[in-house]
Length: 212
Image (cartoon, rainbow, N blue to C red; front, top):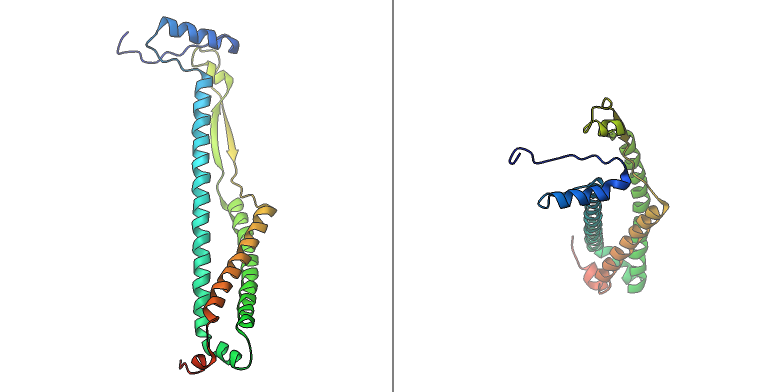
């Protein structure tokens, strides 16, 4: 029946006979494409693996971009704060503070801000994870039972379905929390170093003579 039948379903009596049946069909119909259940499973698994790899790569580069933007924003804000405190640092230098002591002061302030920011970030992360687990709707998938699958080939039993619910979860590990705190502290130190570099060449006379 050319141009009328394009798909033929064949049921094997046993799973051990699938390979032999597939070979016999390929010999009988050389131009036909024979697809077994294992082929379908491997294709689905490969697609899911590719999607998972793509999602992981995208998430990794997105995290790197966000981290770089956060470090840059923290540095800009720290430099801006140092610029606004020129007269303060000039007065401290006139009182005998050295440049290294002022740099330590700036980096200490940035370190405290980084620790506080890391703690707030961890708290917000735990809250967001709890909201996702509490408010996100579950995903459902419906699968046919073995009797339903066999009914496509023979009217043996009525089709039955099994529904599975998958609840979205956001796992929060101690490693992720520790990494977040370390990155927050590193961002504060980096911003403090940039701000200290801005304040290092400051001269007391020039700072005190500045009118704001």
